[in-house]
Image (cartoon, rainbow, N blue to C red; front, side, top):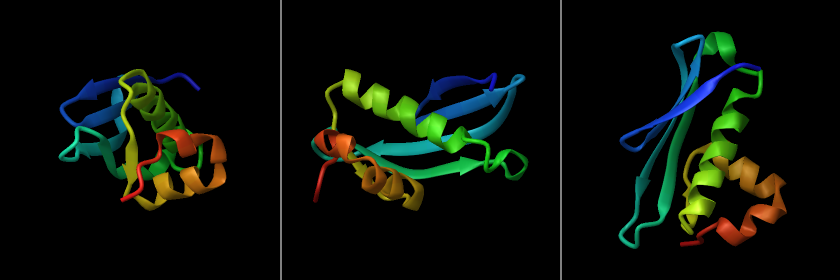
Length: 93
């Protein structure tokens, strides 16, 4: 799976062959932690693991920056439920 992920203001953008095919949209809360608002993959690319790639890259980013995550998007919530090792980065409000 050849792809690139670039960061733009409050977005991670997934590129395949220089075409934008997905986005992870986030914002920060009042304490500077991250809120995952949505993960969007273009219809033709769904079901191929790209949402998980974006999610994992964002987990890596938050971990490096020592930030917690509040998942609002349903996909991100499911990933936190399925992977108990992510509890250390989950921020419960």
